Length: 291
Image (cartoon, rainbow, N blue to C red; front, side, top):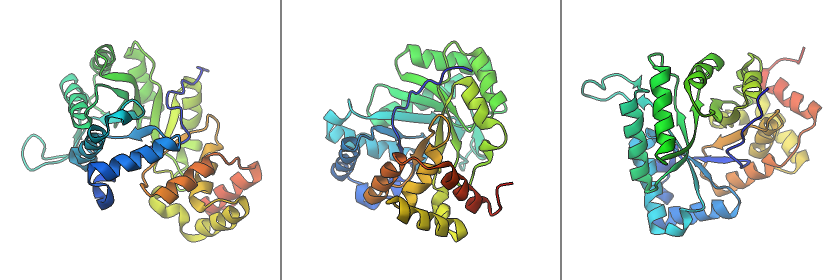
């Protein structure tokens, strides 16, 4: 088993996918205030992708950093690319993936320009590309690191043989894999993926850890509310405590920008669930008894 390289040294990553939809954070000043509040909470990792808001999320974040330059040295930035969204003109008439050297290099350059920074602390290949040339993609990632544009590299949504194929061609270690994981989406815990991550030493970043709010619905929501009241936190915190109880302590990538919800999430990340409580929530989520 390879020792895990915990590059993302935080209990919680803040996802910026919905930033362009948040009207109260559209101006540089209020957004800079929001970023500073997160930093004061010890939350310094912010998750971006070139397609979030068609680049507008990075632009807004970059404008806030430009308005308050002293924040730049305190934030840690994750970037992702290779998804090309469908557009009205060829060759973008269909959404597709592009892991070519030209596309990944241009995508990183675009993110750096929009964010107004010189380096992405972590860059992830956003989706597995069936047409990927592993050698060419590996050389591109290595050049991005050597140029200083990227600190470290990882993947997102990759299955074990997909990340291993890329790792085989790569002269540096992939440090993490960003995968969907929540009480509502726990499949990777039962199909060998979680064990493969441990074996290969990849840190797990969990996107959609609250399943878009669905963890608070139906019987699972009722069970969370009962147990949260006893634990002294909210349902958001308890749902993330469940996730953090897993081996390696996966890091949730939380999309909510609400101050109170983030505070509850952070409190939950520090809560250690007992085994019976962990399995009680799993049982409620799956709608069946643990065999």
